[in-house]
Length: 281
Ligand code: TMP
Image (cartoon, rainbow, N blue to C red; front, side, top):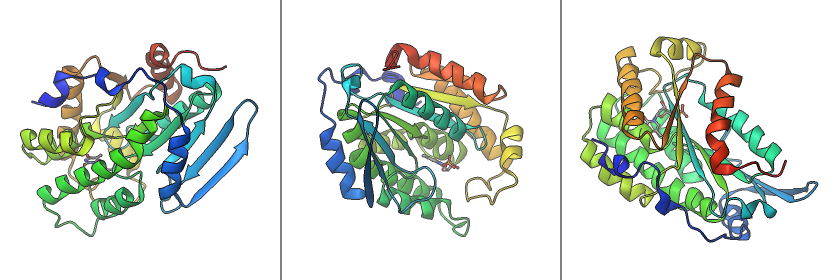
């Protein structure tokens, strides 16, 4: 029934009124990142922390200690969801470019992953050699990864006024482990609340696409353990995402994955406009 999230699809309680200072995040992130470098920019100092343990997206922190804090006292928690091959990564990148242009502070991250421990769990979860993994183990590992990611990275970033863009979050657990693996949603509710300390994204973009088209887009690459699942599995995932979006209309924006990346991006920007404002451009 997805009770936890239908009750409060856009959590105002997650957003505090008080502006917090971003310096605390610098030191937080420095503890788990192996490289921290700074570079000067025109009107603000940009610090970028990249965890060198992971290839690709991972926790990439770009933070601008400028007057943008006044616009977003607490960071906005933005998540992207969708089936395999839906185009989430492209949209995350386009959104990052837009936030950069506006001079808004942001952090991009992903699930499973985002911290050293969560990335280690990711490598277990997605390893196609672990075909024998039970659905129960799978659920617990996704939740363990999320617990570390949320407490170590997401909450400190939001509290420091950083907008967090996360590629997947707990809705994926309802879709993949709940609907597709047929695990108990009450249990997922309990584990999710525990792993996230009740944090709920402010806005979730679901890029909806047919399973056939999504799988066709990824067929050229080496598939991970989840991507290798049957078409019916991915169909259950898609249906569950649509069902969650239907139950949480104030949090969800459903996007047509058949549109061009630029058209989808424009819809995302318009949906975010009232939440993040015009920025510094
Ligand atoms: P990605 O390929 O989009 O990075 O996602 C990793 C895989 O993990 C993808 O197949 C979806 C799956 N997944 C779950 O099954 N449950 C979850 O809670 C999350 C976050 C991802």
